[in-house]
Structure formats: C-alpha cells, structure tokens
Length: 72
Image 1 (cartoon, rainbow, N blue to C red):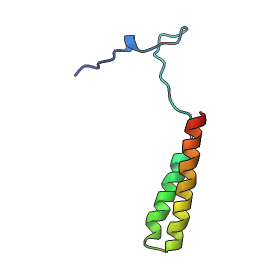
Image 2: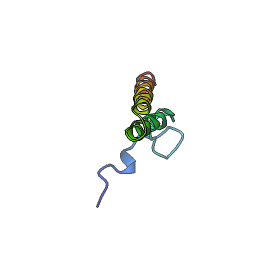
Image 3: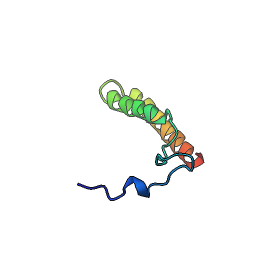
C-alpha cells in the first residue's frame, strides 16, 4: 500500500525540512453543538422544553462555527 503523495511533494517552510500542514484554529463550537444535540435527544425523554432549548443551542453553535470558518 503506497501513499500517492510522498513527503517530497508536500510544501515545506523555507527554514525547515518538515512539510507544512494547515490545521484549523481550535474552537469551542463543535463541543457546544454536541451539547445542543445531546439536549435535543435528552429532551425527547425529559421534556419538550428541554429539546427546544437544545435546538436553540444547536442553532447558535452552528451559526458561530460557520461564522468563524468564513472569517478565519
């Protein structure tokens, strides 16, 4: 099993021999979105109001994450 892109093909920083790998900045939005989804699922058992709050948290997290990706 061979890798189609060897490390020789990856861009490198002029002062380094290591390939440059772009990683996105750390963000809290995925964790907030997971909390919203958990609240929605738990609210189906506990209370529909709890689900409603979960949907609101999910929507805010989705908007925040998309906004951060667009600006960053």
